[in-house]
Length: 220
Image 1 (cartoon, rainbow, N blue to C red):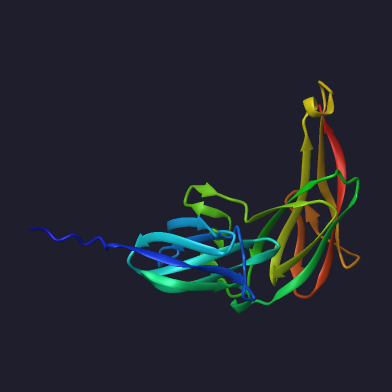
Image 2 (cartoon, rainbow, N blue to C red):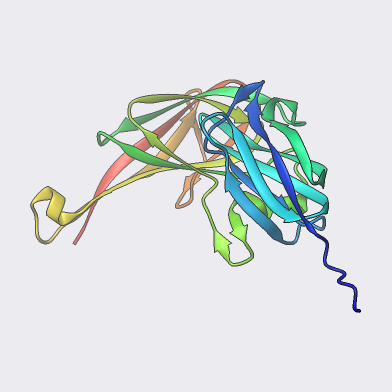
């Protein structure tokens, strides 16, 4: 009788935390040991808990905290495993307070896209999984709704922040125009930083205030 070489399914359960506090809505990925594939993906619940099913054996877990704490933490475990703690405060890179606000022609609400370009301590091979759910499926690292000012806890590293908003013609009662708001410039602690179509380039290495200058345009 032939013997299967496929490992029996395992299960990994745990919590996503920041400094011991549960983090809801974090994306949790179960990566293959070579960091080249995803076995399972899930999201932490209101208590920070997650549960994933995959093959028994070595597994790399990656949690993407999506606000108000922003960052990534990973750990290698042997499945099946219970009570796995993925705590951002335990990651190699420090976490800094960041005040985020918008200036200029600001609509009542903005959507802010937050994307890490480099995070100290995260293996280079794992960086692709900060914006992917699978080999052919992309997902923005974090999407925040900004109304006024936000107080964030951001992991040290290089980040992109881009604020946008679009208002359809029907919502505005106009048949031929569509209003868009976009990030035209940015300042960190009052000093201008590089900003292009992908957003502001921000190095988080201390407590800082990030101001995104918003400009309105019209599409016809």
